[in-house]
Length: 482
Image (cartoon, rainbow, N blue to C red; front, side, top):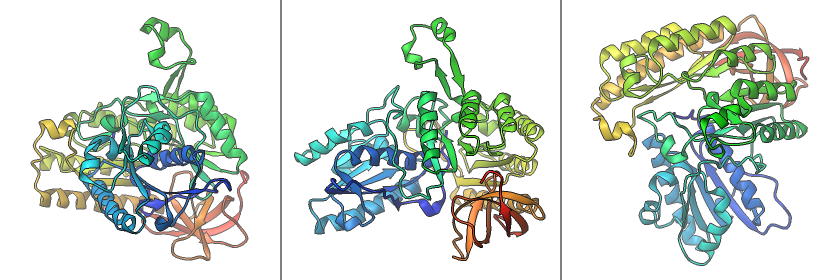
């Protein structure tokens, strides 16, 4: 399924960690796209840290430059190509500098990248990061290096990611990789391979380690976290047949959520991304049971039309999605819900578009991630469906979706006014260094005067006003979770 794009301010951010004094080479690494890419960059930095590389934020002094790429939309790929032009200019000054492309774009284009972008020395797919030492050796010996082999079992569960940049307060913990859903618009199954789940014990170890280091919130991450399933000490491929597999003890996503919440009761727990077809009622009851599991679900729908959902190969109808929304509201009344929406999918009629708008009116999402349809080479939609919606129509429909979402976002933020809510302080406000910025359990951003508080504090904030996206208030004391 399509991955959620993270905060645009983080796109292309160069990542840095505390280096080893014995390391003599410098790595510059940029990440684009989804949360998984940023998480993967932390794994890559950990592997290369053991190979003598410390990270740098100065491109011109780097021995190795890596860009972790996204293929979800054409715009994302074009951004990376422009960055490669920048690297090329720097490489003319520093010819010893090596450049590698990582991630989904590397997987999609494979060796074509070496032919099209003469600057690129190395192409590494999402499942080949452990092969980086060998690939770097190939590059050092003057050969182009490519490994884009997809794995059926690689989860990187045995690698402790370094935490790059960041605020020392929030962190991603990957629990699944790949996707089996085969939505017709999406490249993820082709760039990240089949779905596989990570050993729950290694997940708990990572969460406990983050807690010891002072982190206050983690997001369990995967293309589709709801279908997480670990078979008692093994992967699906380790069992001879279905009967043997059924006899094994299995851990599903609801059970994993409970394990994590119990292991660190003072730590906030989030998860992303969910798929409507796999979101089960036991997950909702687990969320309601544990106070430290945040009441927020990112629940991509992509379209409000059952006919278009079928064309997209989404495994749910409009009606089933609405029933799930009703169930969430029943079990977790104050749960925030966000969406992914695509305008102008092939064959979309005005009636289909109106179905999307009416679904939005029904749910009144807290916020969303909205895009025009972008045909991605290799997907089923590109192979079987003509991109037949005019650009102007796509843009007009997208504008209507965005306008409606802004209205609903304003409606949702106004519900907080007059209430006192818990905020985890993450950073300074973008607009003022005299204010802190943090989020509610529902993932809504709040801004308030600094006073004597600091990053990482849980603070109770009285909400006095709001915009359509941000809560404005005053801190009235520490939370009991502090």
